[in-house]
Image 1: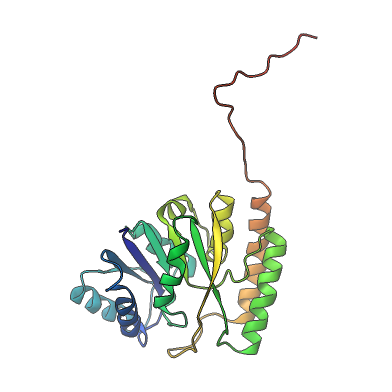
Image 2: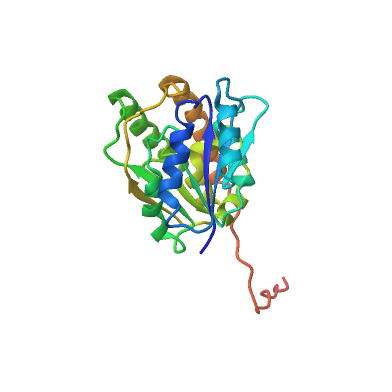
Length: 244
């Protein structure tokens, strides 16, 4: 059985960290023999650091990474993926709006697929947030030439090869499925559940995400059009050039 790494970025999540650890452990302990929980503290200003250290001391499967300062969601996800050791890497947010048990809805599509992206159904968000997400996904797909319906879904499952192929810049966590396809990997979307927020508040506003996301989508679309693809002829001689 392959080892599974579950990665979650943490920023001022003192209210949810213990519940997150409990939910992940309950979801995987009887189904996966080898797993780890990688929690990345993105410069939290509350009690997150001390709670994380306490969990790591009590549970050897918990690996904690502390940033010196707040570096953003992409950096936290990237560091967690790179510091993980599993052949499979699952991503999840700390607010538990996605259920760790849904990791096993994504599992059956491995190994045929390299990247399984969750797609939230019956979203428990405000009308404004749902509409902005729908418009954002449509614009993002138009600019990047992709067809991912819910690239912002925090639940994802990736093979180690996909993780190793990434070199991420700020804001690129929004484009992980698209970047995987650009690198030649097979991507699929699978429906997952979505729960009401029980802990804290969203750290991201609609307007600030919209503008930055638009700029990032333009850049990713530009890069996608310039991906180099070629095939080398095997066991064949190059065609001879005719003399003029």
